[in-house]
Image (cartoon, rainbow, N blue to C red; front, top):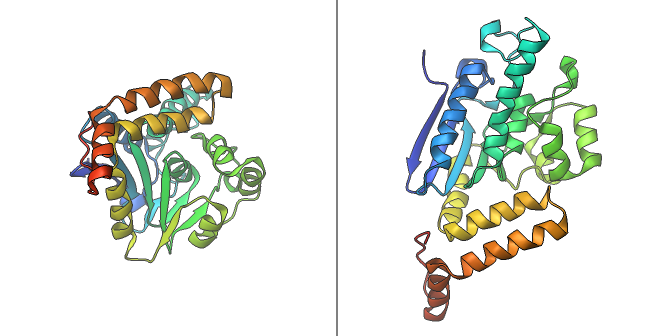
Length: 264
């Protein structure tokens, strides 16, 4: 059985590719298991500073493959208990992606729908090829949504926009996704990889300890009350201030050169 997720590392940037290509990178049980294993290895790696998630072929991920054989799907219809247990396990992959210590970037190269849409929402930054197409899609299939998509989109775009996109599903293109604030940049078709490399390189060149601390601040800002947020934010700020990287940043500023960060 061929792998449905692959990972390549160049410098401090890891690129994770969904490769269930014949099924347009549908989120099979195998794909989700392999994705969880790859993400687990990456989140434990101090050398990896940025994780790029993309799809192979013409799609990012079309979500669930309702035409796939039952053994390839989380929802099989065998029993309520079985489907619930499998879908809860599958949903943990999105949580794992969302909470990774590294900055995550979705390089959306094509169709991005359903559970695949939720995977993209779980990343920190999203960049789309001009030909990419988006759709929440769940309601068209008579389903209410999974993989935290509504939770994530509500925090990204607000409750009104989340209601619009989930209650009135339909295809929309990359330009509309950018206008909504769903993606940060639209790259011409054929230039997505180059655009993502530039942004990932910029992130990878930043101070690693500060980036990880800032990401935790950003995560906390969506879920923690303000009074509870301020203490951990202060603790992270002080730890970063006492790091070698902060001293290097100050020295580089005074010497008018680019800083070289080591993550210490």
